[in-house]
Image 1 (cartoon, rainbow, N blue to C red):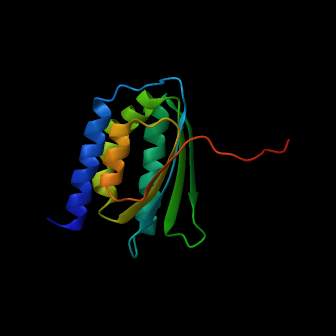
Image 2: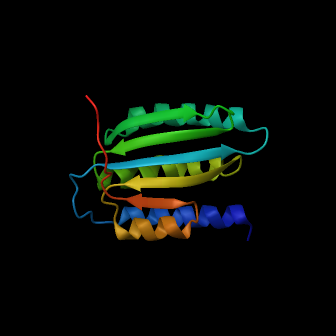
Image 3: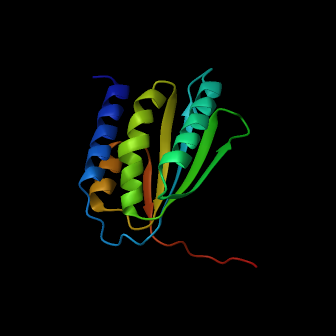
Length: 147
């Protein structure tokens, strides 16, 4: 089994785990920030794919409250920041849009890290760690905000 097929199989287990999760606090938002790094010569393909992903997310995922994408100054990485209204919205995203695009994306880009902020169920945490894509889970952030 190749490294790519292992990651694809682990992604499938992550997606499957989201289908049966009972979320403890369905009213809490979950933020997800992650990076994809294009393989050599594949940056334009990665950017174009995420253009299509953004359109699909906007049309089909009402539980996705915010979707932002930035291209690194080198042009070979994209950083995505998403905010889901709750665990159910995140589970829908992972089982639908992510499931549809992940196998395609790993053919021309490397995923990670994935930074989750909020009340992410243990089943999802375990599956994300098994994927070895640099999953980081945090609670509330500390700091300040100027007005």
